[in-house]
Image (tube, rainbow, N blue to C red; front, side, top):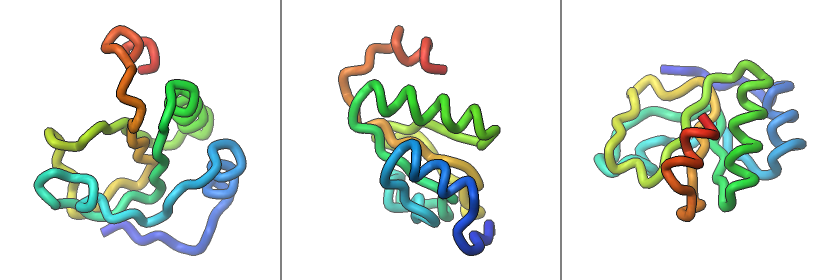
Length: 102
């Protein structure tokens, strides 16, 4: 299980650059099968600009990150995820654009 201590510098940077993020978010709330530990950080992107910005910031911080959509085909570990989970709530992203983001 991943232990999340008090607020840290990474959290402050994420909040400053992205806005609202959630800390210690239970991934089972995202997963279709209701399994998984906690995400260190979670950000919900509602447009293309937010989605791209979140990925770029995570990369610049050397922070492990994953982009998920409806999470119907993903299983999260019970240990959780020690990086940033970016939830894509922007449903107009084409597969070609998604490749350019990654």
